[in-house]
Image 1: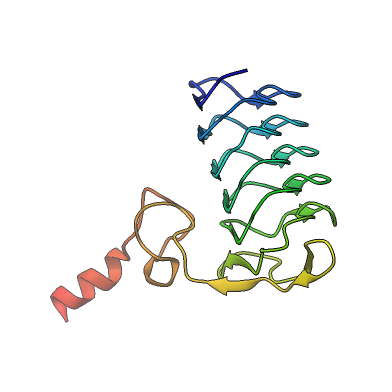
Image 2: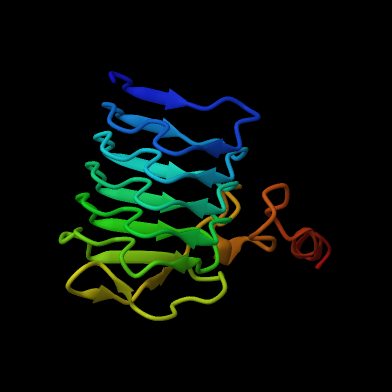
Length: 178
């Protein structure tokens, strides 16, 4: 297969079993309509990086294994990451934008350069137990991020989980009246 890029249209909710396996993808755009990335969906595609949309709740077995991933950003709705989901890549960093999902102990195996796993500090169930990356484990560290994608860091956002609201209107009103 010779696909080099892919952008799913609206209404696509599931990237199925081996859907894009073995291509030469350089980019993938996962819209918020997609809720599930299936087994081997993007395996062995040569992907250098991926951002997983905020609608995705599950990442299947070996979904992104055997790529050239150096970084991954995992959207805020992911609740489960399957066996060897990101195995055999070149990951150096992983950022989680949501609550801590259920992560299979082999999800990040064979990523010997992976030294940093970060999560949004305001999210639930972090840091939790160390995450295995094969022969060693990493304790995730908190970062200030933009959980809802509205352009305002969580520490400055009165509504960090609602992209339609970013400012505390009471604070503004007080500053004007005060």
